Length: 331
Image (cartoon, rainbow, N blue to C red):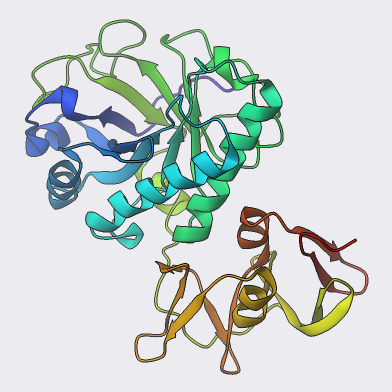
């Protein structure tokens, strides 16, 4: 993977262990971004999350939230429950739109002795559920010693931990570059551009990170926000959506991603759907969808994250512009 370079945006990640933080001093010490622990497992919430998120945003630090995947997550269903806890924590701090950076899956432990395929299944279920609930593609955080457990996840942005200023993280599991590098735990590893591990405003050690680019480039890299849907034009209007081989509606492309009618998809998967027409907000299983497109009065959502979260198979016939969905139980 690539080395650190001069001018990269500097950041930290924090939890309750950092205690009281003077975020104004942190910002003035050259820290551009912070990832803040929100949750762990199916129910734990970091008690400092909301306060840290609000205080960091108030002084202009770019903020993201992270969730530690617990060793009790041994099935995809466990992972989806953890994702629900994470998104609920984010909602309590203002919702995903209040955060500058994508949500993060911190997955680094396997005390349950899961196989590599089982670990990947847990990771994939968590990531897909977070994206389904927030409309934002998550980041994967892990260590070089753990990343080899994953397969097929390299299209997610990577935040890698390797405590060194000279030894770059090795490429692995399909990743050949990092977006974020945690280069120090506050004592070992590389130092800030100032030559120290110490960050003003924090009494003890704190993890040090950098983004592969400037602070302005970081804002641009993750600038897309979910919003109240508005009427939009699609890049493809003549595609079709098939469920178990039967045409059921249009398929549209936005930014290269396939979108299909929300109500049709919900009915096919048996997911309870509620639409608040006044606010133009959709709820699946009582969870607000953050990314909905309105075209000619019909609500469209991205097919892949929702379908795969509920065990359905999807396909895309580029030649004929057909999006296909095969529900569970259909042969």
